Length: 281
Image (cartoon, rainbow, N blue to C red; front, side, top):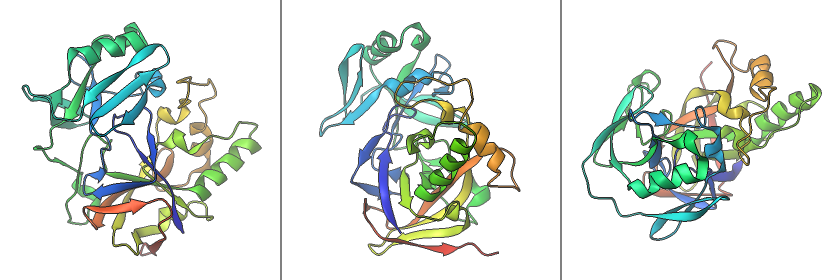
């Protein structure tokens, strides 16, 4: 098996960036989920509320985070941390310390997305703060993350996407690309749902991730990640639910949440050969 694709999402719920390599840290891939949008009550905003966030592209230069949209000129945000008061923001059940970006960014979002973005602002995770991963699945260990939904890494496989797409086509639906599931690490593996049996995933270069928890999927999987459109058929979520890949759990699942257990500060590359260990029966 090998690493087929690496994707970082500097801004939660905006477009991802395909990279050929990345630093790998306890909190995730380099620059992953460092920023997110919040509403006037400082609660996180994603494609669940604003599917059109999928239409905002993201780029990283040596100096700046660049946001772009077809209807407005790009805006650059310095990678240097802004000065100002820390604010508390909420992502799911966690309250995190964050640094607000300028009002210019808020105005840009409204210009790009319209009135539906009114009241939103962009915040940056304050790295002096530690957001811990839920302890229930860490087997006594510790882990932390930035603004991800809950875990620093999301791992998917090509075999599982192939199996899902075969089921979609058999049901008269269109196949979907991997970006519907917004993974960080895509493993080339022919066996469908093999990742659900992995305990660890490791490379010869020294990093190792422990797979902690199946990733329950939501309606973001139904959002076209190019256009922000949401088809009426609620696919692929409906078909994924019927496949029941995790029969002991409620809901639809695709991919595995993971934490880093070796290799902090190393490098992960597309093409890396990886090996898995199996979960105990």
